[in-house]
Length: 339
Image (cartoon, rainbow, N blue to C red; front, top):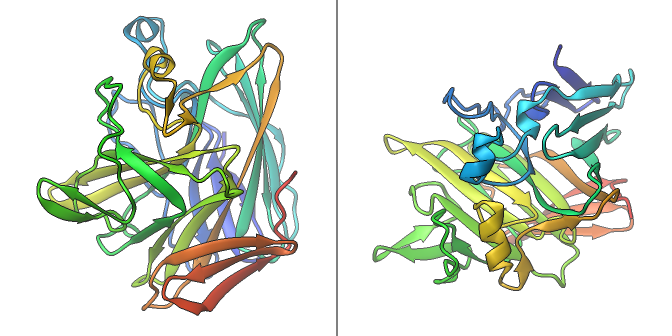
């Protein structure tokens, strides 16, 4: 099947039906694609770009693996069904679906490009096809790569505290608590905003439940471009960061917002239950449908850009406020989250 291509007068978005990943998101006037990463390990599922971890984030149990379950769930291994073709004209819209053969969860995704803005909005409906309720997780695995990713790329978000996810089944791994943007490791200070150190390979952070929206941005001032995502914290209370470095060079950086912050099989999540008073999994009852929404944007930035301090929504859109330069703001109009 051919690539799904959506576009408006400012951006182009490409989605691969084989796995359902967003593989290209760029400005028309400058085709720099931040999410051009793809895994090269043939023993792993075909992860690439911004892919979906569903019905889990992390590994299956040994028994599940023997029955065919794979790392990060089935969604990225399936051929997604295209329910309607993108509309011609100034805006683009597409609807696609995947049904997990073993997990028996169905996800229907509607993608809409905002008119006159470099923004796309995604609404996803998760339906339980099982005759019983079950635990599950969904994580939006956004993965940036060179040339957009280098050691000067700045990552910002509004999460409040986190921990190193040691991926060893430990039930007490939230100590010591990490606070963005710096942490101590082996006696040295690590700048978490920049990918200059392989530690922590995986870290997870929670958002303040008093806030309505969570967000994450990656900015490369030298290349003059920023990528960002915004969502409702009630949908996705966690963000997880994954660092992949080879020969001292950054090759991939995952900015993964979702329903869990522990990269472990379901029995470990069930025993632990919560970290920082946040659930480590979602539950969906028999026949239930759950809605989740996020938006993504691109924007030009100047060469001396300091990163993002805040993203604020109002009745007509949202505003991005720069760190230490609150007079420099970027505004997007007519962007309203579904209620």
